[in-house]
Length: 378
Image (cartoon, rainbow, N blue to C red; front, side):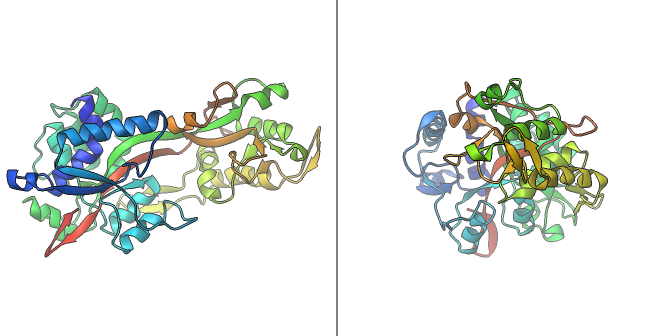
């Protein structure tokens, strides 16, 4: 599979599976595709330029397709967790949507998505009879053995993402897709529900200039204890300077790294395939004791006595300086920072030397729509 094909994977796949490019007569008809990632206005920087180049390459392959931005219902103050669901409810959803790790189970269980098994198999150059009956490991091995899979696709589709994109089908025996493809019905079977765009990991960023002024080394704290010590040293509310930013809008999401570094987990999948909360553990107690101390434990440093260590605002707030903050490490991170003044590194280790943090898969998925008497994809 060539690099250009890899770049166009997210959009091209949807046409193949949705049946929007099929037959010479149908292919001649103009098509409109509203897709996540299509710019709605002027674009800037390297990321914007890359978006335009991918769109241009796609249009050359599919001149009969008009790409439209994924505009729809806009709800001020609402996040990506709620806005796409409201667009679906209002029947104004884009044809291709962005879904991340934590949203994916909701979209699959509610039958919002169209499976992409056939496209993956075609692009990989494999034919797998009743591929929906394979477990994730077996399906992954079949796909990776395909004659069209190259290093670009192996990098884009590492094993870790398959547990998220290859999931149980909510239809069971009545699955319309298995019927459409002439497969063997099964109460328990799996489909591929998404196409990974990229994988990003949370990192700890720090202000090199603030660290230097305090005489600290040019690196992130190695342990959670060191994080606490340095954050307290750097906190000076009188100067609007705080050692660590931990906004309170999504505290659980922002502090998961502490839970993982302490050896805990938020959820685990049982043998029956169901995900269950498992944060009732000693590891969780240790992790969130640390979080509570960061927010609530008084301390004294060279600037005075203060009721807590962290600031609850975002590092981008004007007039406020944060010495450290957690953020995703991706290409967008480098659009907003100056590497001469901002450094980054791994999250700090927990008491047993573990270092854990969220890995985020950003992917796109085709929305399933009603088309007359049968279910299909837009």
